[in-house]
Image 1 (cartoon, rainbow, N blue to C red):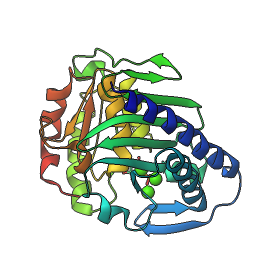
Image 2 (cartoon, rainbow, N blue to C red; image 1 turned 180 degrees about the vertical axis):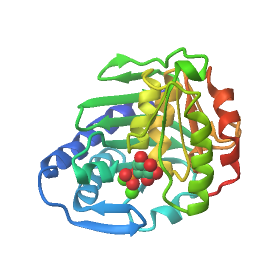
Image 3 (cartoon, protein in one colour; image 1 turned 90 degrees about the vertical axis):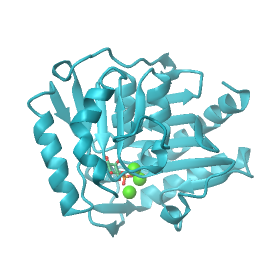
Length: 272
Ligand code: IPD
Ligand code: CA
Ligand code: CA
Ligand code: CA
């Protein structure tokens, strides 16, 4: 792991803590809610947390590019990849936050060309800070993380997220879920993709999959899973495609990857 990546991880942690302070300050207040799309909301807290995060990053890295969910034309800028770029989700799990349901998180990743080199996911209500540096391992509150060693679905609890983009997607999703339900030990839906990923990294879940994701949902969590010994790819992909820019993501402890890919095969043909 490079010194630059360790430095980035350190600054990302202070940016995440600055964002979390803003979120905590607003958690018990009434929220201004805007609707971006079906079941897709943004509150004043998302924007204020994003401003606080960006301010900290800019102080140390004035020349880096920033891709943050609540910035203007975030979706349009996703594909501009070259050099150093920070990928930020100021509140991952906005619906949970709005309704007082834990968890929700601040997610911050540093992308260097086509790799994520540093990552922080901060579970705000539970005060758990997950971090990773490429080639340098993953930690939670400073303790090393490792995926679990479940080999089969009956040994594994699996996390997912429910799609709300299109009805056709929902139907395929429900078929896949219906087939997995009797096979896996259990299925969970947290409501924050970054948390689902770090829960794979710390061995709680054997696997996580979701469709319709954006880079800010998965960039940081994906590095944390990999550095904890797990695997993250696109659905149907072996890792050749850059999972960051594909909306269908599957993360596992590694041992379950092929089993999950088989179970998720019908989702391959869905595009976000
Ligand atoms: C959402 C959460 C949710 C997932 C959605 C995401 P947001 O992020 O991660 O778990 O199911 O796909 O959009 O909008 O709360 O940042
Ligand atoms: Ca959102
Ligand atoms: Ca998100
Ligand atoms: Ca968000």
